[in-house]
Amino acid sequence: MNQPPYLLDRREFIATVAALGLLARGGVGWALPAADVAASAPAWLAQQPWSTLNAVMAHLLPAGEGIPGAEQIHAIIYLHNTLTTPGADDGQRERMLAGAERVSALAQADYGKLFQLLDGEQREAVLRKLEGQSGGQRWLSWLLNFVLEALLADPVYGGNPDGIGWTWLQHQPGYPRPPADKVWYQLTPPIQRRSKAT
Image 1 (cartoon, rainbow, N blue to C red):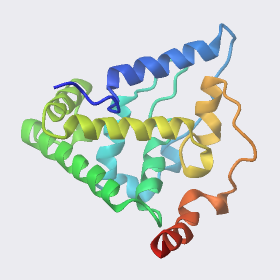
Image 2 (image 1 turned 90 degrees about the vertical axis):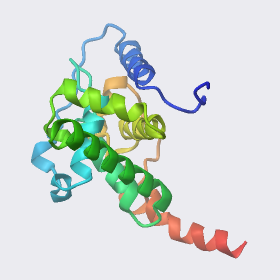
Image 3 (image 1 turned 135 degrees about the vertical axis):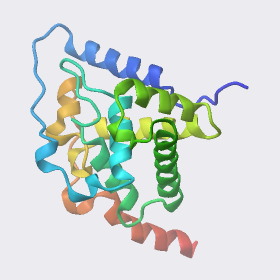
Image 4 (image 1 turned 90 degrees about the horizontal axis):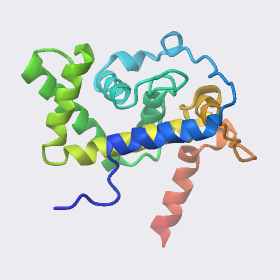
């Protein structure tokens, strides 16, 4: 069976992101702004399933020389905000959290450890196993989409701190940028009321 066209393959994702970075560099010297993840880590990040999700995203998009990884772009903060704020898609949240539980179960079954305590080779083996299971590839694709959104979204949504992704890609964001009190999840309840009335 052919893979649906909307599924995002990890190799294709990383190659595309890397190519974007190389094209953006254009031979001009540049540097990424510092983004200290550990110093600003929220308390919930040490809890499950967020610590597992954070480790999976870090494995899917590791940092490279001059290339921000999932941790540097605060992908987990973006994902947490997207899944837990008012107006979030309940089905989407349930699917993502269920996938994290599957990753944890596979890590425990195969190595007797939490996923985030595994080395790179073991993490890869767990994710490859998940990829071969029903719905596993789709879940990984959804997670990669969140990583890409965190890289490109306005920092007001929790990812891309100080525009680190924009700096890497030499992207000029559009204006006006969204103010903190007008983010999408604060606008959702009125939209829901309107849709119920129709």
